[in-house]
Image 1 (cartoon, rainbow, N blue to C red):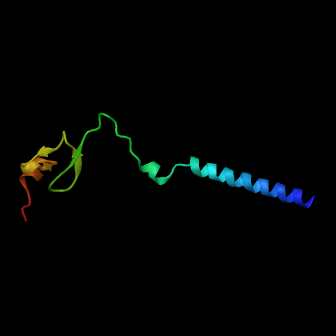
Image 2 (cartoon, rainbow, N blue to C red; image 1 turned 120 degrees about the vertical axis):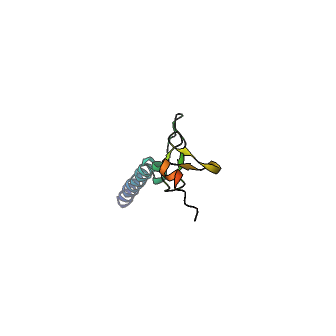
Length: 81
């Protein structure tokens, strides 16, 4: 009878361990949550050379030396210091 009790306790512990392993494997991890799906129609983003704001390349204003700006004001007031 004593051995049967230990076998039942061992079996229940094994089942609990397996269930916790399955839950851990099924739960999303932090890296899964940060993976981004890029759609085929996604547009490239560029950074304004003056203020650092990111905007779609279609809305950016081109400047000299392949630089981009978010507005005419920033394109005209380039800081050369």
